[in-house]
Length: 191
Image (cartoon, rainbow, N blue to C red):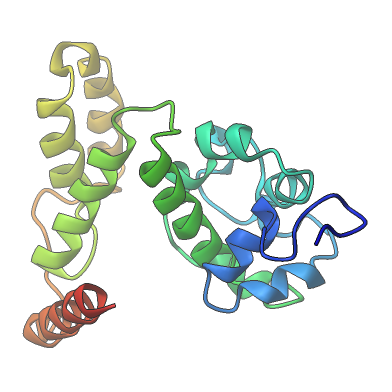
């Protein structure tokens, strides 16, 4: 059987696939295209496309363009866009879904992006939060370190303004966080 749109009933569009693979993803249908999300994230200027644009691209079935873009990789998971969304769309979770899909299909341009993400996750697992100096140092020393020397003056300026901690601060009860992460890994392996 073929539907009016030329698809079989079991074939999902990219848009439907993203919604189905994101907890609460069906709320994406409620997007008003207001643009609040695009002005919320601290790394928005570095993104190829705003989340609002990504959502339009999903509807247009521009799978390769979305998965090859840097937008999901520059999402710092602060959840500010999700918090500010008038429709309560889980934008951060959608970005995670897009990352997983890009990795699964090998459709990401920045070959360092998964490594950056893993380095960030390692910091969170170790300290319970991001430790920017450690994150940047660990990542940049293993990924073309000589090309990163220009960041030195930026780091010094941040230190001078007291915007960069020299030592990490762990959260209280880090053991509880680690137990939660271990359980999440266990559940992920079971599914």
